[in-house]
Image 1 (tube, rainbow, N blue to C red):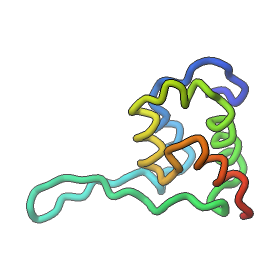
Image 2 (image 1 turned 180 degrees about the vertical axis):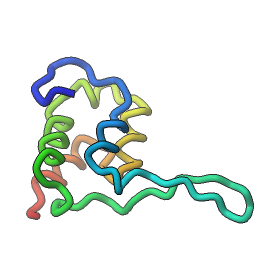
Image 3 (image 1 turned 180 degrees about the horizontal axis):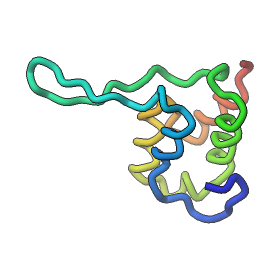
Image 4 (image 1 turned 135 degrees about the vertical axis):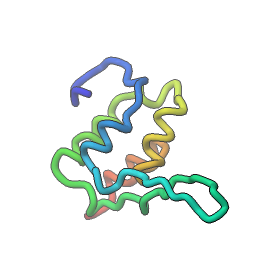
Amino acid sequence: MRLTSGYSADGDLSPLFEWLWPDRYPQLSQETTNLVEFVIPPPVTPKDLAGVGRRVVQACYDNPSIWEPLIGNTTMAFRHFGLPETRTGLKDLLDAPA
């Protein structure tokens, strides 16, 4: 995703987030009941955003095509990496002191 792109980003953002934060990739957990579930990392904090990560999150916030219409892939990608699932939540994260 180019940071200056005006095109729709209705694809899956998970590979981009996985490249940025490989340690935050949600892990599968299999409990004794044989149920498989995702173990979601803790929420991203302002101190977790640095360099390219901050620029990508800012680009996601700035690109209205990601948020309107909101699609399931977008919401799940943000949730699975501990990022806010709403544009307002991203703005709060970006504006918070590190």
